[in-house]
Image (cartoon, rainbow, N blue to C red):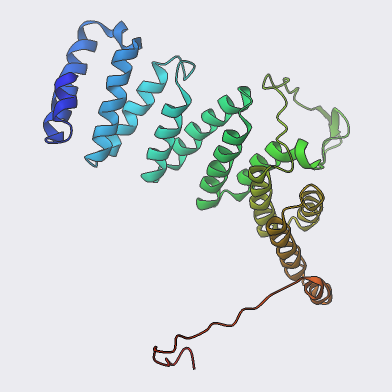
Length: 275
């Protein structure tokens, strides 16, 4: 491993060959050593090296082995999880990106690291949006922000439901989540940014009522003028998406919009665009 680290910068291909031979020979003789911290660190370093050599297929297999040999991530530090997720995102691996970001988010919520959890939430939501899974993004952001902005959801009224044939069926029993209640401060800038991201996705999914309620809750929870201006813009966007043109005109009349004229330097030519 030390020789591979020394060759890493100058001859990465030789370093990859040394790591492969070393890890293969070691685990072939003593497979139990895969659980040791030093061996797992070598596997992660080997995976990073393969990714730089544009061999992501083998790199992602090492990521999975590194995670499984860490007792399903229980022994992993959060830096390793987020780094793996970012490398998967870089190589357009949506499934692994969502998985490792989800594991990072779960750990941050359990540790009550609010700001880090909100940042990872937005990264995961953006991943869902990039691959057209907007409803997954809505579910994630709503679950994270439901206690901060008192979001209302419709839940089954009874434990028994009646299907079309008239038969009664019992709803599946959901186990209580062991993760502690997560309630980020509503006036935090990261919480507000997550709420703005949720509003944009809600408008794209035509959840206009829920988006309006969320915008009101966010406006009442902050005095940041920049955030309030963004909220007013989203309110106007909500009205225009509902084809409420009269309400849109009435709303933008109350907004303080400052249009600054673009000055042209005295020595510059008058282009067709400026004309």
